[in-house]
Image 1 (cartoon, rainbow over the protein chains, first blue to last red):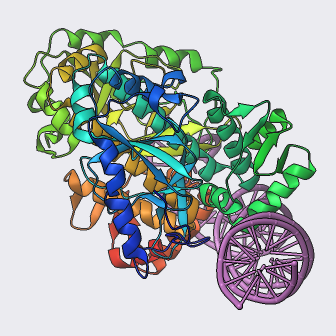
Image 2: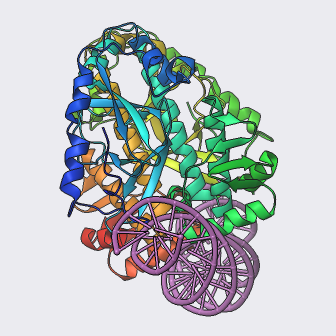
Image 3: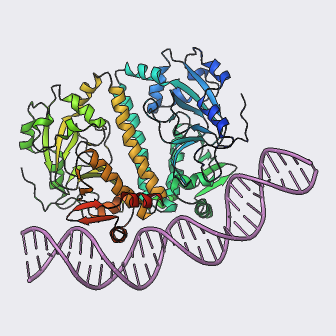
Length: 279
Length: 279
DNA sequence: CGGGTGGTTGATACTTATCAATGGCTGTGG
DNA sequence: CCACAGCCATTGATAAGTATCAACCACCCG
């Protein structure tokens, strides 16, 4: 199925709250399950091996905790279906109450909160294997936006089924605990950055963090990674302005710490970046 | 048992990393369980009703989620013992591997991360009913400092026992999920504040947050709460300087938004504060 | 009484936001 | 194929917000 690429829920720079104009249309696409996708749902057993969008077979290859949880799901009858979301579209609306939990199969996304005046703060970036709206869906709404940066493919599970299956596992306690602890640790890192580092340090830290994360997922060749982020994304993640990000990034390149070209980023001196973070 | 009040693990303003001087002494007190306290452990069944330090019987009275978890522990044989920690002492060291999880019975504490240069960032404030080192103790170390602000009393449980008991509960999934989701939501709020609000807004937000939290715990009379925080605590929580906090707090009082006297804080205009947060 | 901690205030310097102008790039429609 | 509109990145000038430094005072406690 094809989405209309013009229908952008997000304005550049600022996120519009509330729906208006063509927003009705989005809401339908986002909240409801498009009918032809719904058909795929039927009784398909989940298996990364059959996941057409993920040649890397992330869910099996990854040694990450969330993957462990998912891996075992594979042995059990669990319905799921795939969904494609084009770049810039909202994946999860803060006011949406969903019965599904989603795992990213490919592409980049972010979760963010927005202030009444439209400024937004990115809370985390999501890559293949990450869980959208961390296990919260069956309680209340997450309160966060989750938005696709690139085209994204998701695999969606029924929360109730996931919950049942996890409940039967003896080590569920450890799985959940570790998952959440890791999640919280990332939030803490961000808090420290925002509270106690200057612009340069925040950006350097973000770059190093993303590199480490993508290395774990085999998405890095040598020292370079695909880098679909716009400078406004970096700004929203680091609490800075896009203008300022541009200047800092320029400095970094002039100092031969990194190189950005063709939507990919190369780290020339990880030590140098680390030094900037520490300063 | 009495602690030497002079033995301060924390320097004012900056937290010293690494141990030196009388640090050995602290470490012993902190890591080991003082022997006379250990005696209390024996086979005492946990009950808030018998908790000498908590007349308010928080754990039963509170409708909070963590309390639900704890409440049920009461029906089961679960060993615990009480520990008193004097103000300014470290409750949990980032390098400490503990078999125990603790719940605050009375007093104020904070958890924080520190940078190599000694600056620190407070991640959260802890009050009665809050769990120290959120359920992580049996995996790796939390990486955070938890430090007493006032004198604090804790009740300590064996992680393995808590885990066993929680594992038998059918609704454990919901309990854990809600607990962590709430935890993460608080972190998100802080991230937004640090990333996208100015000093005034961050401080106003913190005051309102603390007031709401303490209202839930019946620790507020009218519009005033006990307020043992030093301005340096506020600075470390909001990513500002103590000097700047002083100026902002002065402004707030001159504008009749709040009044601080005698280690207690009164909110004179919640709407006014909220307006500052939003600005 | 003296020392340590905590709070206040003013002067100055640094960091970052804001504003404005420019140019490259891309997708679109004539 | 070209012109155009949007989006994105860059750059410089200026303004606002905070940090830093230093001095001072108040208070508590031994």
